[in-house]
Image 1 (cartoon, one colour):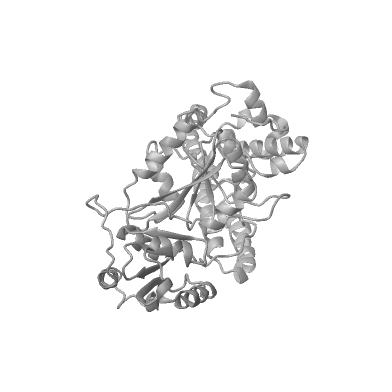
Image 2 (cartoon, rainbow, N blue to C red; image 1 turned 135 degrees about the vertical axis):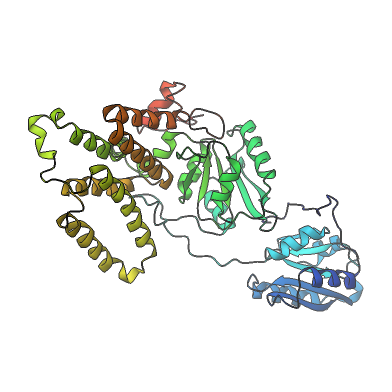
Length: 484
């Protein structure tokens, strides 16, 4: 049962247990859950086998057909055959699979608020928890961002049980483990650690478990991002990603088979993968859905384009500051018209404008997205050049940067390169060639010294060097049985 193995205690550390008196139970729950005010907290008093009973549940999580069947079965129990204990009741008279017994109030209340039905019977010192809930959920469709040209078209959704099932569907092994935990004093958010026994680094797994158990926050308000910030608190100023995020179940399943840990958070339609290196972030599903030669080409093309998005604008700024460095055959790249604004300001303003367009696209209604995109292209493209605010060459290179940044599926890596590019632009504008070289060194040091969760180098297997594993990272080859 989802979340049924988690035991909570009171703030004092001593569990508060229920009694066998139904009257005391109802008085406690009615006050604790404020049933007179909360319209969706429903309780119903019934009689089962000559005993008074009460059913508590949340409206909206109820499967009416199942509950009607259970209530019909309960009311048919004759008083003489009524079991004496909750344990006997769960075994003899419960015609449902997911049933558990609980007697600690914190656990019972948490499960009721999670959508589990709680059945209390007078004389029983344990509550029968019936997990017949159903969550509002969208269809399992291909993610909008994490698409592939080939491969499966399903994607993670906001319902945790559906996400674990998508991975289970791909890995039919008893070594696959789905370990559930909780975090957040108020939210009590379910977190699942997904890993393969025998392949995962046990020491690293214990470290992740310990960090999650020590999280002391009121709620994971931003789902996975909140969890990521709680798990990795050091070197927040380094923008390069510490986790890999994916909305594709096939990608998550592949990383589990390689010995990594996949972390699923309830209400989040993506998975966190750890530990990672820069090579993991650069990979995509299309690298493996095509033949080795095509997959290798796609990988190198994506790497070179990412490198170009970082270098093209600082390098152009450096060349315009030193036009005598440009060969005669490449003089066409130089600006034909004088600029009204310094180039550095043009680049910085356009960096901000591109993010403004992205935010506008996200918040624009679908029916208006096409006409507004055309208007934005006309106004910001043609008229901004004619008005003298920007030069056409600057607009061309920034348009390439804006489009090429979408070759990366990782938003975190895309913005990390953006921040590094802005730093390089400023250093180049101030210090010229030395600033350009310093900006490249900042990029290299940021990648090399980016601290990972397991303490291994972010550039592994390049540093420390492992030729065999590095060849599998750079070239699309047939994967061996185990990389780790």
